[in-house]
Amino acid sequence: MLVTDEMVAFFDKMVAKRHSPNDLIFTHQMVDKQTQARDAETKKFKAGSENLIEVSWGDGYQRRLMIQACKLAGLEYLTFHELRHTTATMLINQGCPLMVVAQQLGHADTRMVEKYYGHLTKSHAAAMLKAAMPTLGVVEPSKVEPLKIAGT
Image (cartoon, rainbow, N blue to C red; front, side):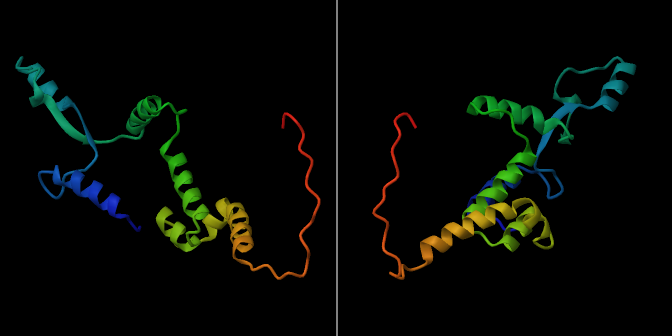
């Protein structure tokens, strides 16, 4: 996967918060059930942070955060997978080679990118071709103007 300078800076900041190289980057705190059970048996339950542990995000943990972020941004809810599609679409629309897009998505070749985003490359290629091709002067420009209909 290729990364931008902004991505590097973001992950440098996230990694700097870790205490050891094996610590996870994206975690959340939850009650340690084993410690809680042991403390309950000995009647030594402590309501403080001693019973909290850092754990990795579960399957649905990011969903709650995405819902919250979308609400704050005034957007309809979207998933991380939809962000993946958005990224691929933006890269293709900016003229990024399909192999680079495939690598960013974790694919070994361009087949999946062509399958799901091939329609974008055709319209992008047509626009680039029109912009790049010189006028040959073999056809005079039309003097006919399209009608302008009120309200459209």
